[in-house]
Image (cartoon, rainbow, N blue to C red):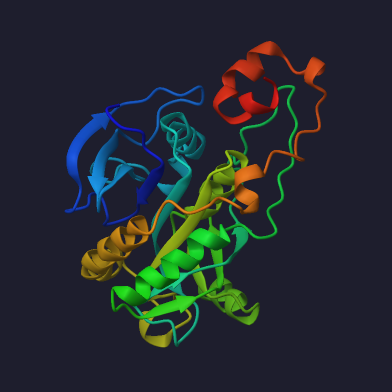
Length: 288
């Protein structure tokens, strides 16, 4: 790498590239957890060096359940990334959150099944705090970036992360609404958990593509509807991401930056050497 990279960008459905990226170079990384979704595009955006990763791979070939979340986030850690801005397509569970709006959520509710969402195990146990799953400082910058782009934005809210790849039933959609949840998607929860374990600040730009099927006129959500709205929002999303990147770096006084400082339970002498070595980019500073 010609210059250090401290900012990561994850592009979701419809956001497979960014027009403003300059001085591009592709990096294919191999991680202890397998292959990431594709090459990381190292580039310059608004004067900052960034690493861009298309979440679903070239040509959108990976379903949400097939994503290797650990490899994706570990790859960012290997590159030295300290902040990740993640864009994701979501459905709305509220009438006032309309298609083409952007939500910057502050909570998650997990409806996934069996996805691996930790780097730990195999002789090394850690339990990070996750009560507040998004970085407050990075989230604040993202909220301001939405406003600067002139987009219809919503600050805060709960992102229901479902398994997919099927969309919700009406019964499920109404259940989430009665519970007071705000948006629904299929990808961001595992990214946020792993970013916290890797001590990377993480925020989500949730790009609303449709009302979920609770809405009378949207009870038959189609891929065509989702993609048409997402592509319609792609230019705005890129502007918001660029506005966010422009404000970085910031002081990392958040809990994200030191999430492992009180989380590792295993005594150092009991940790297998191979596990320490595998996780060195994440835990190395605690066992030096």
